[in-house]
Image (cartoon, rainbow, N blue to C red; front, side, top):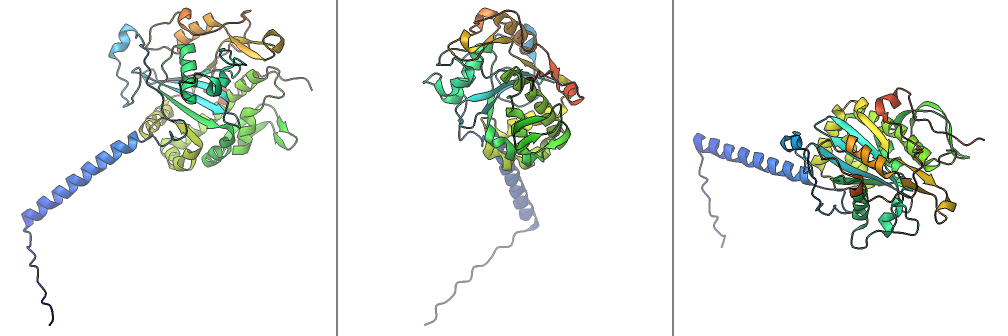
Length: 367
């Protein structure tokens, strides 16, 4: 016996009901889009390796006029008006932080101030006492990345909002994804017999970029010479990023994200990229922690860099505390082993001057 089919009678909607349904669907899609965009901006896709920073429990006293500042950016920052990121470059093994720079984005003042911290900076607490060993041998109660951030925070008393890090081995694919770095190399660099960068204007490949930022063999000042050379590369890299624009950079982000470690959200990356795109290269300045080197015979068989405490305090108060009150030198966690009032580098460079050819002087060993 054949089964009988039950016919379902469809109720036709009138025009008014169709309009209401359409409006409900549109509102629903708009809501989902808004929620999706919100959570996408909050997404932190680069934290898998190092995680996020622990909450900063310090109290930062502001200048009286700074309490009324609104920088206009939707950032989760410790001090309104500024956003500070600690940039780290690891060695091949990922155990030492051989490059450390503090980027202070003065959003209200439309400036970027960069503080380079030499890898041999003495902070104590390990066999070598160097800051580049804090990641592996610092406070065992903290995660490695938090050890580094805490050490820099204690030394400078500057609030650090986020970190960003890369292994030196991962520089090539990131630079290649950007299409190379146009740069004017002041002098020929012989990284090895088969790895040579000729002097002059050129576009560095990713591999050549790694040679450039790591090279120090012929520099009289060793790592300090490399720190100076890195200013040239940074200026060229930022110039390239500004030419690309934030939209183009975000297009290559899926390619480079696996090489970068950071606790910045996508929204923060986009906001800072937009801000940096509008900052004049003349208003991007770079300085180095003031101090001087100690030869191995002066300290435990290791070459170290001794911070000049008062000079550091003065520098930070003038250029890295636009909205904080000044901090006395006694408030900085600095161990000064030597101060003969001689500096390896007390020159301020801005990126526009570097691009225009006024590059840092980097003495070389005689051949």
